[in-house]
Length: 399
Ligand SMILES: Nc1nc2c(c(=O)[nH]1)N[C@H]1C(S)=C(S)[C@@H](COP(=O)(O)OP(=O)(O)OC[C@H]3O[C@@H](n4cnc5c(N)ncnc54)[C@H](O)[C@@H]3O)O[C@H]1N2
Ligand code: MOO
Image (cartoon, rainbow, N blue to C red; front, top):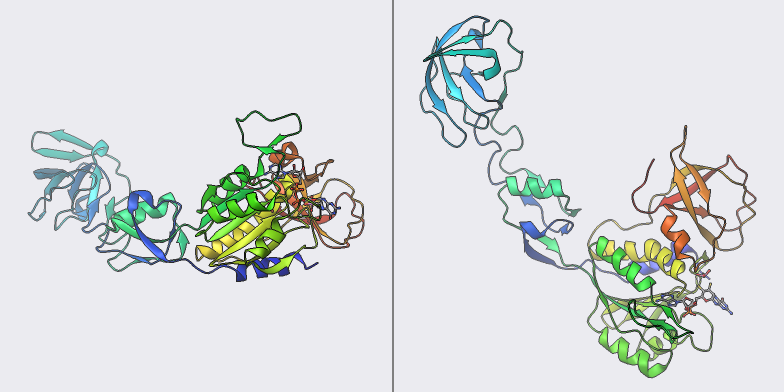
């Protein structure tokens, strides 16, 4: 059995950064930027007013001063003259500040009387001007690769980029295997259960920016598996679930080998997830996950997510572990790195972590309550309440 780190390196070696495609800006959120975005102009392109009020010369911003209003500039329409001594321009937020003016006095600090204004007794200290290029200059860049956040989309729009070059979504074909499985919504027989983990994995894949295709459930025989493998052709990554262990009906490895799988590894020193398998199949990669729902999901977080990031051209090493204070005693760990389902809450100095009592790899109800995986090294000794341990956050974290 190889270690978790060795298995991750082998998985990453099966990936390659995918090519770029051009998408409209409005569809680019969450995608991975493949080429930098360049600003085509300064923003703002002119010195702009930050407030509704009056543009004037700062040296004349004296309480009680009377000034003559010489014109008006709404946003989108500059006033072309120059502000001289004793003059002010009615101006609105976002409008170009006229030459000669270097301060905006907000309208709340002004009394209007026909064509003249009188400045109030107290004026706030702000100039309320946005110099041209204050946000960014022409030529400024959004660097790639980068997963595009809503803020990035707004910035790219402001830079006047109507389309963006993003990495193609990795195509993932997903095969659930087992005679006992039916799809959600179907009527299971008395000996059957509902296929669950492929749906959880699809959600994980799509949250990471991949595109997952759920293929029909493959039955526990060679013909059925071969038929469904055939449907998976063309995918960047084929993910199988189940049929990975040593039972008489665990045929995935055998069938994949018959189809030309170049196996990178099979079985890793990890709990849950021991019967993990990976290799190269045709042009794509294959990741064979164990069938137990929690094993499949934990392997999804540890191996599938980094593989997707590598396909997307993002940094894709092992996820950074965090530290927490253990809130329970733990027996010594065995020869497999253990990823225990746990709950992390904020603590005084460090977050506090409590593993769930029941750790069986079939318990999705526990997994859905967990917000962390407590990581126990191979052959870790007994641990006491108060010890500091490593964990990986699952989803949004409350620290
Ligand atoms: N003699 C041994 N038996 C087992 C070993 C072992 O080393 N020696 N390893 C155990 C471990 S650890 C795991 S994990 C499982 C993995 O087995 P498989 O990958 O072959 O998975 P299956 O046998 O097909 O299924 C296991 C379990 O999960 C359920 N399952 C499968 N697919 C789905 C799905 N898509 N959605 C929901 N549930 C699913 C299936 O019904 C089984 O209950 O093997 C142990 N056995
Ligand atoms: O490795 Mo299995 O995944 O312990 O349940």
